[in-house]
Length: 179
Image (cartoon, rainbow, N blue to C red; front, side, top):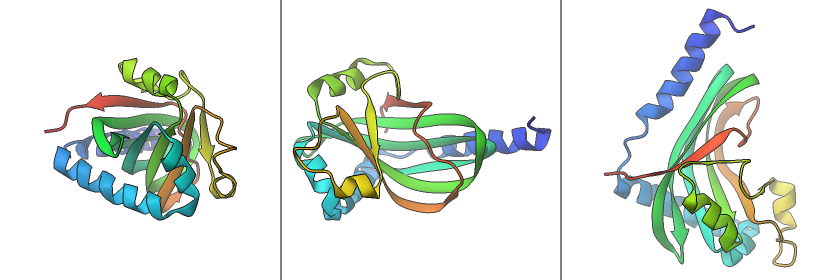
């Protein structure tokens, strides 16, 4: 059973990312372009970048908590190497977790139908639309154009910090309009 101290820490973990939500378009664009350059240097991400109809990049997702926690980040959807829209990713979790981490997340939409599910939703909850395959380093090493059959793939990159648990389930992606 969570104590009052746990609930206070969880509230802080959930509130802290909200303070990071005032990035400008220029800041998001810069961070997304830096992350895209990093992804292009990752040999195992190339097949995904080459075949995806769109790529949603969150360069910096802040995750933290103890028992209860939260995550938040801002990024952009790229189509044909251009930013098509801006998005936030947010989530809350409860269970066996402890720590704090900053990481990036790239989601590669391999089918127009998967992208359409994101675009028509007013806040897309991961797990309620097309299936997403989270690629770890071992699976990334085997990703080729002939093995990429799922509608959406995700790669986590640039992890800093230590988190005892990390999942993208229970996460919501929403369209934002930064200044």
